[in-house]
Image (cartoon, rainbow, N blue to C red; front, side, top):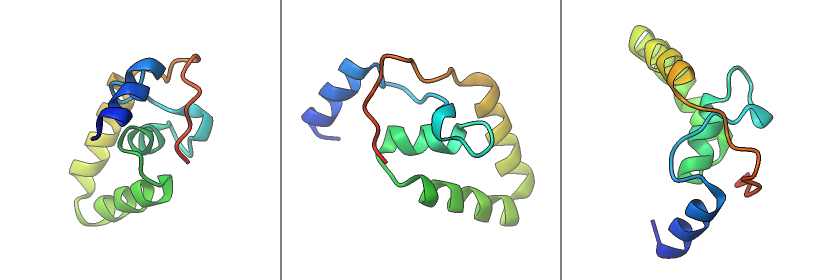
Length: 82
């Protein structure tokens, strides 16, 4: 990541992955990952579905663990990637 990307991340409080319930389909895990890596949410969701089809137990377990362990996105972080 470039320095400018790191700077706005730190200022917005997005220096780690958060659940993004504002743009969530289920629990906000894919949306939070997409925000962190500055990717389209649809791409992350598509990869998750493909992973669930081919590696069902691993993908579903990873998704549920992320849902339990990740914190919600702070309210003061207004930067929205998508």
